[in-house]
Amino acid sequence: MSHLIVEQPVADAEWLARYIVRKEHVRRDGTVKPDPFIPFKYVELSVTRHLTLTEQQIWDIGERVASQTHHTQLQGRGDTEASAYVRQRLRVIAAPEEQNPNHANVIDWPADKQAQKEIALEIVKHVCYKAKPITTS
Amino acid sequence: MTLAMLESPQLSYGAVPTRGASTEARYIEKQSEEGRRRLREAHSIGLGVYRAFEELFVVARECGTQNWDGYGAQAVQEETSRQAHHFLEALPLGIPVPTVGAEADGHLTLEWYKNPARVLSVSISPNGMLYYAALIGTSKRSGTEPFLGEVPEDILHIIRRVFSA
Image (cartoon, rainbow over all chains, first blue to last red):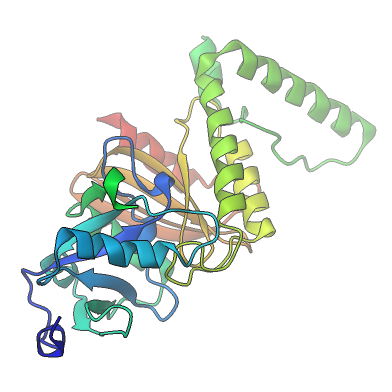
């Protein structure tokens, strides 16, 4: 992907993925808990911009994230438009990394935990969970 | 009658702390624990809590190493797991059983969920602080409380509201 594209500001209508490695973070009805949307450790939340990535490329990045854990495998991803964060008075900024040029950070979170939880509960109302397709691993 | 008894805050899923150290106090504690155990066995309403203890065990174990989420998460400490265990034990019988999760800062979470607009999430820290947030229709509640062996009344009230409509 061209660096010119990934360095562009994140638009409100852009789709962002947050990878999920714990099955407990997905509720029985297929919605996602707020747990994986709590920022840590710099009071920011890592997400991946879909931009022009193919589905396979989005899953490949997820596999790389999950491969850094010891016990768990990629379960799926929570997709949401950047506007879901912006409505909570957060900002999404492009933060390309060598391994993931589409990396972005959700910033401007309040420092206190109870406020973070309140925001995360609102965000997950707009998250669409996609389970990892069986064919990707 | 039985359901009314199960709603009693005097009955919990596990041992509530006793404040007495005398032989009599210990005897009473043992008897009441035995009573609770029998009630749990006798009523399916209490059985779900075993699933929560099991979930807690698995989550605490599998999130007990650094970076368990691939994003740099803090390991869940043994003390956090102990606090969460005590919290589950202290839930009054008749209160719906939560599901268990973990957050990147190493806190364990308990969630009472009816739908995306009626939900309570409680985070438990290793030092026994409870951070909670809830959506109850159009209203929101959040707060921070220390866990001192009994589930704070505020949290019990919110759980009941989540499931009331």
